[in-house]
Length: 333
Ligand SMILES: N[C@@H](CCC(=O)N[C@@H](CS)C(=O)NCC(=O)O)C(=O)O
Image (cartoon, rainbow, N blue to C red; front, side, top):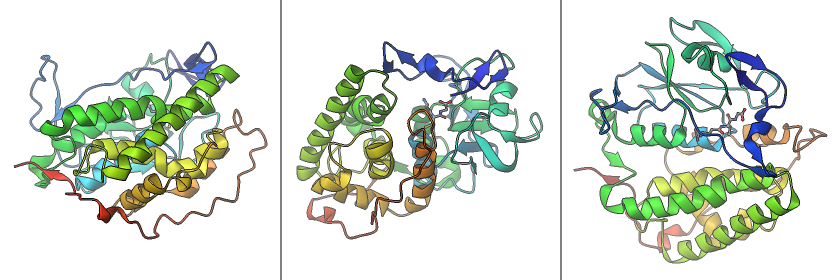
């Protein structure tokens, strides 16, 4: 992948910086400012930005599972009117992520089509990967945060006073359980599929593949007795798993060689996937065409660039998850 080096766009494939000893290792994220309800100092005494309607904007791609989780939280938390969204073209080429039409980045950036402009505006000397999602401050013209795990946590609570939406996807009493599933799912499933797809040695691929399917088998067992990962409440842990499951049969199974089984072959996981897909306002955050085109036009993993026609999936078909007790999403008092 091309990237920025000291603020200059370099078209060579240098995201090989994410390969070590044949294994794919995700680069740490750089912009980590938080938004809070009132912009107070955080627990470590660092400044935060205040939640405001219309001030922040999300730049995403429908291809990307990390971006997808921010879209899901924006939808569940009723933030559509407060936080705008720009969706990049699904194919990432030598210019990186590009928008089909000019986007408005606020006064400091003006109109632009190349996503890397957000990075150079935030740090003229930036070196590193230029990724989605980006949570952008329209007023200050700089990146607030480009780590989706942080972004979903802020969306979960920071804007509640403005929206009146008290749904809590990370409730206090379930945090240990949620963290447990998040850790396992991140390492072996969310990032696990990338470790299969981008492995540069057979041994690294085999390792990632075995860990991925061992976890999927475990999740299948868990979801046989439990409606959701953390029990009866639908939480952040489920949405973090969902973004990989919903891409699996369309993209990872073929493009990333994750082909021991499809999600459709797992009775519980496939039913669970359908329940989450059919959850109000989630369907519109998923674009299977962008997902397919995006993953299959990466020449490093698909040199012919031929896009498969299948699979035939029906995520809208009936699910049977209501045979297990479930309580929907927790609400803060
Ligand atoms: N830590 C980031 C990772 C985001 C990420 O890796 N995004 C990918 C798309 S799925 C990207 O933009 N990659 C661009 C590149 O590798 O140059 C997050 O979770 O927000």
